[in-house]
Amino acid sequence: MRLVEKKKGALKKAGLTKDWKEKLDGTWRLIFTAGDDGKGLGYVFFEACQTWRPSASPKPSIENGVFLFGIPVLTFSGPFKWSDATTTLAFTFDKLKAGPLELSIGSWESEEKMEKMQGPSFKFIWIDDQIVVARGRSGGLAVWLKDSD
Image 1: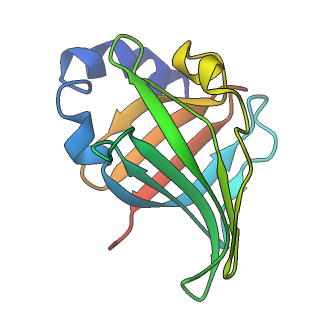
Image 2: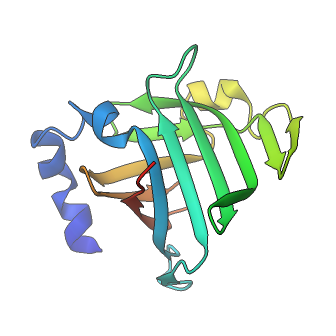
């Protein structure tokens, strides 16, 4: 993991921030997570996906969901904000779907915190056409593979 962290500066120079919208747009399946202390390391055996829509209007959007046989069981969605300077995506959830039921839940974290990049977030280490690697605000590492959408 330290090697990946050291490469982050090189990734910015290699253009991580230039075409992130095109690369990140779509649905990504979470395949691996690790806690910040190295515990909780493991392959994600159930279908957990995140869909990022950087060009959504009026704000870029994120959807985080758990699926069973391709059917959404539980999803949270809301807006996000991207920082080119830090390759960080801050987000908040304002909608909850459980099967056919959809609820407006206000903001998981306030949009003001999101705008200041202080709420839940991912700091991206790598984005390409097939894989995304990021650290969560608490320091955990996550790896996603591009889903077929």
